[in-house]
View 1 (cartoon, rainbow, N blue to C red):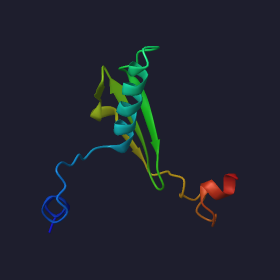
View 2 (cartoon, rainbow, N blue to C red):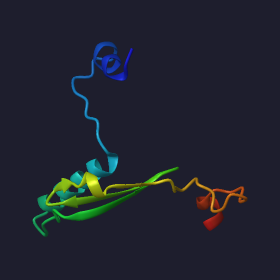
View 3 (cartoon, rainbow, N blue to C red):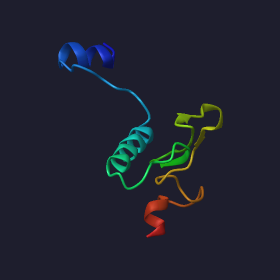
View 4 (cartoon, rainbow, N blue to C red):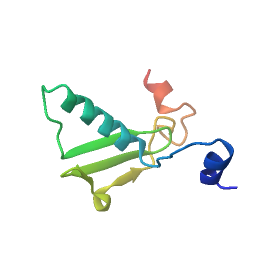
Length: 94
């Protein structure tokens, strides 16, 4: 059983959104900034998401994700600094 069907039929979830977590976070931040009436959030931005084993660079141009210039880097907080280093970057930098 796929995860969509499981969520709707077994758990009774009324709606489900799939997307990039960094874009959801940016959208939430943008709405909170615009709601404060102190500033207007930028429609053009560069979002950098650092994960455990990969990082992503997500360019937003005029409020839309530019997929042709989106980068996925195989570097994250758990990637070793060098092949012979036993500790993750997060531990060795501390």
